[in-house]
Image 1 (cartoon, rainbow, N blue to C red):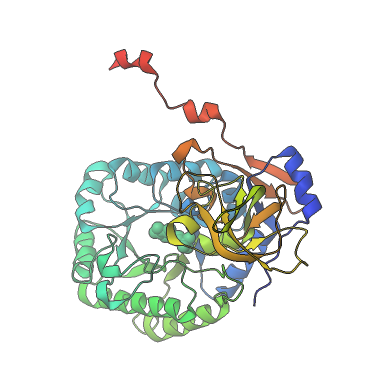
Image 2: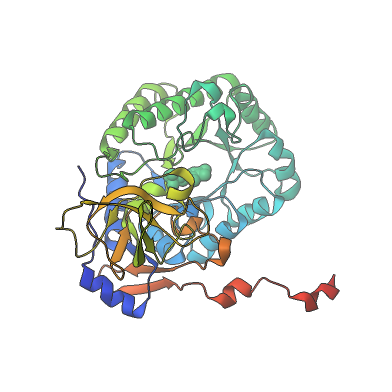
Length: 420
Ligand SMILES: *Cc1c(COP(=O)(O)O)cnc(C)c1O
């Protein structure tokens, strides 16, 4: 069992909330840095190893600049993500564009930045050529189809909209070589929030075998293998974190077995994990507004699904702590909800927790990735602030909460109708 800890005590959280009212997401800088170093250390054998942090997981410039300092790159899938990465200071091949249904302006921005362009479809080659010409380096996203099983979060690969198929992949590289591409990458992303160690070793096997096949059948030498993201985190106390050392050892064995004898060495290995990097080090801190006894007992928070959508859309588990009440028996059965007019706005259903009263602080764990980032404004809910717990123990506001002015900023009132 994993002990689900909070880096701050109840009184420290109360103090923070005097300055920055709840709800807010709080990220733990020290833990993010330590985890990043652990990840890199596990892959120390792999020359040029990098994780390209999936910007969509936590698109906050302060978080991204911490990851830049930890030698990470970025994985972008939209134009604003490319711009955000540029502003933070990422450049060149530290940026990967893994987009789908890609518009020309993303190719233009990626080419200007010297980013690695990872094509989702062979049909995109024409648009790429028209908008920026043929780059020196190109990568393709591979979709193995029914050769792999995927998982509930991402669905079956052969039903997924992403990537180049098994029948297309070798021809895709041959075609790009004929067009004058000099350097080649290979990418896949077949799982999401996957906790099985063997899954990632199998992904490496699939990509290494494919790299060998591509070389044999087209003469193209893959120099960059991108294993994608999707490494899961233990949301539940009984979950087991992935063993990065074990995965790394498994991948190295396959590298020596497949890549080296095929004359492909050196191949640079990269990942594009988001969740693994920041997920466990973010917390959504809320305050209880009401405890309502109906057919069931509801704990109503001042945050809602707009601040953390995963439980509402996937039924995902997020651990809940009630700071200051850790030592009380968890003998109450609650549904923990937000205030959205949407019945799946529930952070937890039938959760055993200690007795909760209005005014208590409630902390949802593991919101450091795909938490704030998935927020939305439905029901005119305003997005929360993001805070950073610095290594020196101070707390810094890294994104203010939205205001009603933000909400109204994009609206055009009737007077502007004449402008059409
Ligand atoms: C979302 C995404 C990731 C990151 O996924 P995690 O589960 O956060 O690791 C990586 N690559 C691509 C292409 C993605 O769409």
